[in-house]
Image (tube, rainbow, N blue to C red; front, side, top):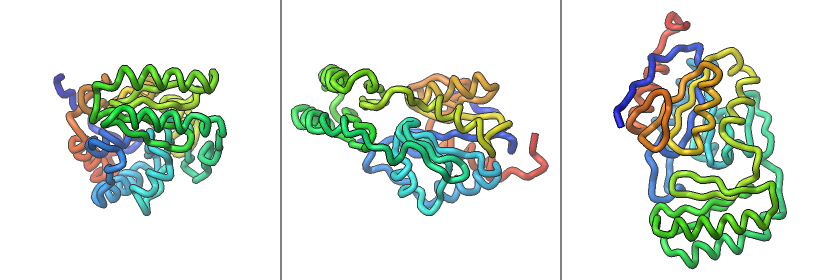
Length: 250
């Protein structure tokens, strides 16, 4: 797919950034992902230039993102929006516990046991099964997870990602998270930009596009208004923001 370079940025924009596959390259296991010090410094500089209007919007938990980017603490939507930390620091959803998930944890773990090469990522309020190292098991994993999610009732469903299927509560997605951020300073009144690489980022794309913003796809798994090849290209674009002067507002 042809690269469509994103437009030159403005200091009047706000950014919503996926993590895995966007800010860093995908690994064979999400537990191996790291945020190098250079990336942490770069995000801090971009956040300063945009007056704090930068948020991470990820399938990771906020706690996990904080550990990756320590000591940087950005506004963040974790678990695809199930939890969200506002720009002023208040967090919603992060400490809610649904005991119903305890009933299915053993069943989900069993899936990884009987499907070699797959593994479970238990995020607390969501539970994901990764099959990147064993794509031959996708159909079987999908069928089993659909049945497990159905046993929880109508408030849970299975969300598809890049070589991962995740049981999570309904009513949350990255687009809803972006919508909520846009109601709050310092995001309100700015032109939104969403950068992501996965199916779960598509709803974020649609929200920023509907608000006159910019969607930037990383790689060829999803379709945005613009496309860059990889996380290295994303970082180069972000460095352009970090280097901008106040005279370039507008």
